[in-house]
Image 1: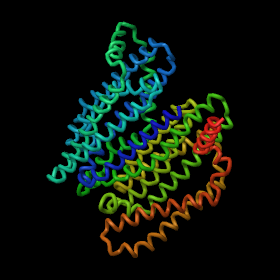
Image 2 (image 1 turned 180 degrees about the vertical axis):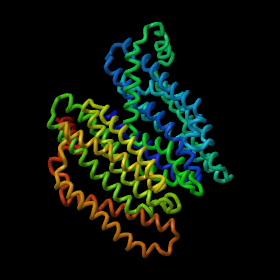
Image 3 (image 1 turned 60 degrees about the vertical axis):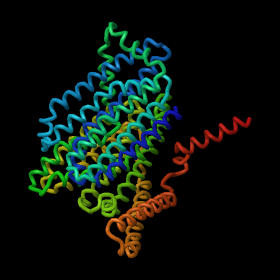
Image 4 (image 1 turned 45 degrees about the horizontal axis):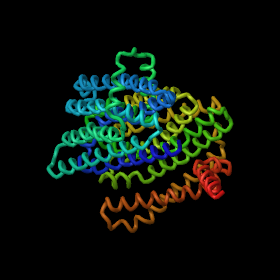
Length: 525
């Protein structure tokens, strides 16, 4: 189980890092308007990725594992899963393809209709991709095909997008040409995934024959409904930021258009810069969630409520600490990071405010993992829906007055609402303990020390960077400031004993070390 989790975690981290990194050169090639074009369409594609790589494979693997050694039962699961996937993916493909024009009108940019139709093509690959991944994960607990297919797809996608974007940059392509390249690369990269998964399939003809030869057997529509519901639920929970991005795609441009700005599209592209850094901030939380869920699920199954509560509280404690550090740190160097990555300081205020979502999304992800392990996956979903409603309302009230700063505030309010509801629920149902006030004070001391050290460091180092041009100077300040702030934060956390000796014993790293030492002793014996 741990080996499989490690393989999937490593692949997911690599994919997330590549997903965040390629956007930087892409934005530099395409400009703010070109970046806006791709970001407007991206949520429609990202949902297909979530369905095919996270939600449905998890649910299919669960049912496959429950079937045990009964071959007919496994084939029955595969058949019903394929029906469920064809229904849900067919619905999304048809809806996006047919209603692309009205959707583009709702967004406020008719030129996006063709790109929405291209993004819809990604749903055509999801059924067989998700089925094969779920089969590998559930039948033999083989995570390698899923991991390699995710990496292969992302490498292909990144190379395709950056290669053609470089060509367009040299030949002065327009913003929508850049968007077309990026969307096409994203929509058709799953072909590589399909090829990799089929290569891993041992008996291809037999697999296809068994899957379709049972077509005369009655369909259990209740099972199909359960698969659709659970698959969609886990897909949405895996990417909590997606719902907020989708609301922004549908509302921000139209609301900015009412402010009589020179180019609302460029303004939206500037606002979308913050989402790149938010993805980086979520990588640590996603890793923590994957590492803790198996342990928490085991404790829940054994009904060890006290141990579950202690482990879950520690997860929240670590998530809050490093989420707050990432948010505060980025706020301190937001201007320098903005210039370093995107060539200018446009939208720095919105960029700094959006940094706060690193904390709130860290809490949401960790709380979702705790609730999933406790058998309550619907609870975080409801909180996410309510948070999205807060985000939508905030956009309508704040953007007409504060432009993209209002959009950033709306995201902060929406994610904060979901995070607070999650924490309150966990405490009221005795799944976690409330963080002691001493821990909050210690975290405040560490954050204050980090902020002071970064501020002082920027003053000192700026004397040496003044002769440099804007971007190199900002790069030196941003990178060195991040290192200084990170080191100071960890040192202060250690000095004030934010994690006590009981917390340190429960950390997964310590458990793995003990297990390795015990294994070594047993081998010697």
